[in-house]
Image 1 (tube, rainbow, N blue to C red):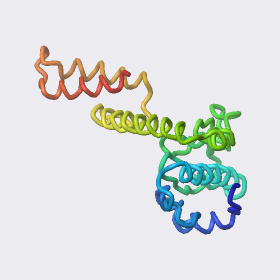
Image 2 (image 1 turned 45 degrees about the vertical axis):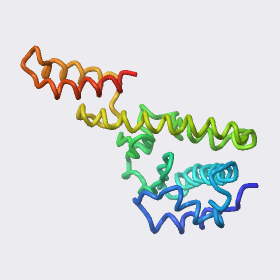
Image 3 (image 1 turned 180 degrees about the vertical axis):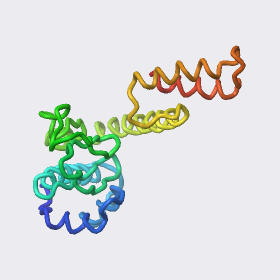
Length: 206
């Protein structure tokens, strides 16, 4: 059932796009004949699943052979250069950045390589493909688009706070405490700015 995409074919395709974000639609068109011919139903999900399963296996092969990594996200992937010599090779799945600590794996990430990644676990589990039905696919897509909406709102709220996407819960809470004190109308702050900050906090504290 799984297409026979060998390492060399994927390497040839990605290596000329080093560092570029590649959309899932581009990959589907490159590796499946007429991937959207049957619409957006179960057949397309099966192609999507097989594609992402192969991308995760390709990432494992890259790490072992050349040290490159494939940064895989929900709708795009990026081929990355290997980490700098002597640096930790743990890849942050949120930011696409290597840890940067000393050693092939720094003490913080020793024993956590390859990275724990729920997305990878999903696509390497055949039961998630074999058990998919039209109804369960509909429910999955509703959940995905709901998550995407929350994710976009959270990213925007973090920008409002002046924080990076990988900010921790403690950093978010500390920034909110400082901003709410600095800009509260009772302390001479701008009411409109405080309202914007409060709306961002309402998104992030969920």
